[in-house]
Image (cartoon, rainbow, N blue to C red; front, side, top):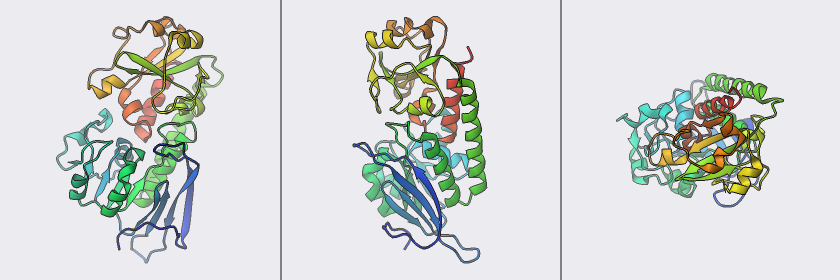
Length: 330
């Protein structure tokens, strides 16, 4: 049998990494993702058991045909040198652009609505997914062992960077790339420390805003960009209520009260409509123009593909950190 899910754990060496979890609708409770290696015969593949938010997945054979249903997962595999046989190609970030035109990589539909027939047609022996495809977990699991990446896209405050590092190590174990995975973790640690050294003791307060067809929403400490404040040391310009996945619509009173020293603008419209990211000349919102950030030239137009399409992978995290640093270097 190539794959099954169950509640019993085999007696084996246990490598445990606590992860923040994410529900699809309700606020999730904490859980633990674990990777278990059975002791193999010499030269044989070590059966790997991965416990994740949606269940327990057993991989009994070395994966050779991997389908990744989220761009974060594609980046994880890319960083570990693991080929991909299928992925959605509706929104591919620039740092993974070579996959979009690669005829050897099957287009399996949309990130939020994968084409299950195409997924099945790739004959996968491993499927990687996130909460965006959670309602397809059972159907996907019937095709191949399916592992869920327990990242919380609504509230990244709780261990977001640790979740990314843990997933790197999980995949490193699964693909026998432990040394490379540890190297990637060390690089992320160094990058995080770099920005924390930059933000430490600085008085500036920042606001993260999302642009969507002329409207703006802000994101605080308990939102998809919460880790910017909690893990990277950025001081929030507002302590408003939790803003979750879609942010809090900005009013003139909100802007006047927050008056941030730094603003990070994530242009969702540029991503969804495939057009250039807005800049100071094209942003006509009078509310943002009244802030100290605008007056002092510290409005950072972020890498929208890294922040919005991904945001939970090694490459996207490094790009986001570089954007954060720009706000303190002007």
